[in-house]
Image (cartoon, rainbow over all chains, first blue to last red; front, top):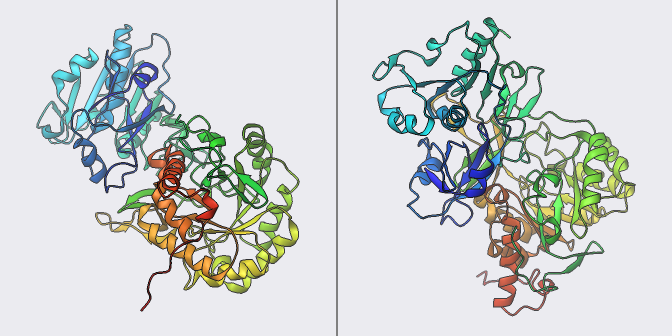
Length: 238
Length: 315
């Protein structure tokens, strides 16, 4: 979905997000805004978001007709931090693709070497690859768990342990946890963009916490959503 | 930022000995310590705010998920995560003191024991940057969080003790989780409280049916939002029937018309909570909506409207 919000298009940095909702005027509905990574910015001040229907909130958003208004608060949160000139490998699971569309486009245009690994459950869930190429200028490497499109298996199987690239990831928590293990085992630096139920997006409700490696609850909205993997507690064998 | 449409003066009231430019405050737990909203809304053009709860020691809060949307509202179980008394005094209060002029600040105070409440009040009482206290005896999301709010003797003893500890306005935030809010309102008045906030969230639960587990990390949480508007209005009305204290009406307000219900039921001030998450401008919009109601009904001053509910036939 694309919205006309030039201030956000002009100031957003890849990895940042917005709170997207219908506001208080939505007749009868009570829909808290939901966090969405900035997916792409258009030349005319538009900002795009990947909206996949999970429940009533996302369904209501996707039912907005052309020209209807939504409430967009942002850009919010800490973006990805990249070292100059170092190649990047972006690992996207499902709608975790969103921040990497933006990031890949910006970094590819700046001449950086960008790999984009994109995993989905099956072919029906796959984002329009032609559009993805057009938006990013990068050839995506697609994986599906059932093998119905791209290469079969998990997206994480496409990683080279010895790569010198910075590893960046966004997707379901089990995927991020697997990547955190991979990064630790192979001494790769990894930044992850996490998701948690979010109330406000600006640090006031304290709803969206994740566990840090030193045992604190850290807010995904203002301390994240991008964290260094080693700064978070991934459970299990840590 | 949104310009206020209100004609100056109509919404002004004197409550707790000071002038409130607007009857609308931001509710505790939904506006942080004020700073978070400073770039989003003109805080000095609403009545003020109630801070996140402050306890003696910092609290880390509950495991996620902490929030979820529910039909007509949301559920939360943050667990009173807060910076604690010392950091609040060192970092949060000075900001409020330096940046707010007309907006009034209440510090929401929480404790596990009478002693802890008293320690927070004693620790803050000489500081600048706030008007008074909102005593939280009604948090449903921590162990024993509602103990004071649901035990008549414990509530009386707590209010008595805090009354002796401060001359600042002392507001008690009541829990709806009792048979009759009016009984607890009366206790607060008898023990010397200056005002009441009615009402805190309702205990609730959401179950993830795929995992067959509670969705919320704390298992249960507090339900807020439009779903509880009628219960909050009723609690306000019961409190008004039972005592003469000023009431801060809270629960499910998202429009000026919602706020007017509270005001007719007896609240002179209102608090905006969950609605601010949906639209950070909500408090300003509510303020403007109240002003439009006054114009539409040719009410000269908001104070003329407070508690003017016309009793219907009871048969």
